[in-house]
Length: 450
Image 1 (cartoon, rainbow, N blue to C red):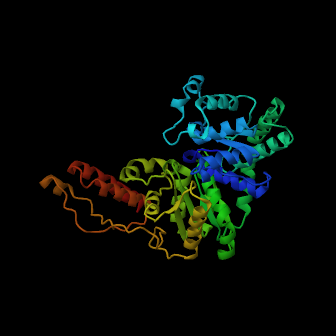
Image 2: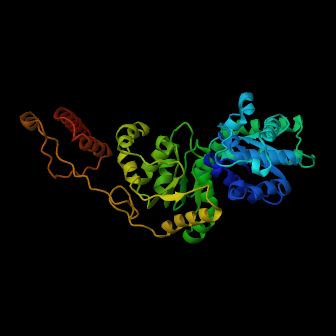
Image 3: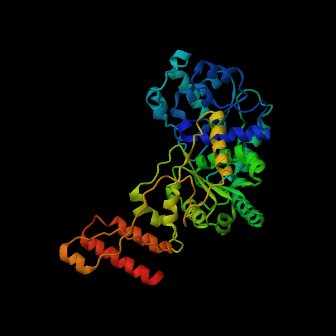
């Protein structure tokens, strides 16, 4: 599997695990990214030991020199090649192919030392992008793990059609068969998701482990499913509970499914895979809020490559617009991001990933004690207790233009009141008039909610 680590390390590894698990390839799948230190060996493997070079095409795949080198080596030696096209892939234009020395990033390595010239790559890539090379697509209109199930079906169809075909030529007929098959899978995607939802609603979810990922992010979905495959058996043997990956059940239009609330309340633990899109994914944010509100015994943040922790600006101005205001949850999401996150690096070796997944099982086995009303656990980051003052009186503000903040602390049961208090605390360094405005808003909230 030829791929770009920065864009598709989790997707490529998950695809390898699925191919090996289901026996769709004879001798198993091989990840090129595990052997980038020795390009001589890598190109020799493509030349002598690879039956099919599967190129997983994302935004930057063809800008990587080793990917171009593998394609060129396969073209020279009549190795079968298959394209897996993802939504982010944009093929190079004719002008970019003509100036390949600028299109490909040769700063990381030069292929001349391996007997591969610019002209060789131009010929190979022109052939690679032609209709002679088989192509299957990752269906963007499917969400969750259904994307990868459909992809496996397309790969299986490719294998059957081209099993006995010599060399690297693929007929137009077989290409049409695969594309037609993928279209049919996309058409039934909604029905598949509905059927899975019905099954989950009927399952006994008491005490299960849920894994949440951004349902629109293929890399996050793959990372979540790698985790599930690696820990499912150990979780079942150690904790006697099932592991369920949620992205296949989530609606990519950011609507919270009806099953989410009872699931969050009934499960033993939730692992939240934090990816690039998590902070803007309403499904994940609402899942986090529901889990903390329901006092789920263990909530585990798992940070993947590319995730950046939110700052104060996010909590104040962005998060409120990402949550359903009728249900609140801002304070719960804030509590979640105080927890110590585990690292998950899909581009690392398989041994490293296994060790990182074992950390999840270890944290689950600890059965941490709940702390306070937020449902947080002993794994929480050290945090400062925010002591909220009573709203300053108008007479005080008019007298000296400042507010005398005392050490009084408010304990409010309503989420909405807690969030209004947070707004007041954030405003304490502003002008007196702005503080008075926030205090008046808080007063209105208190009268209507307490």
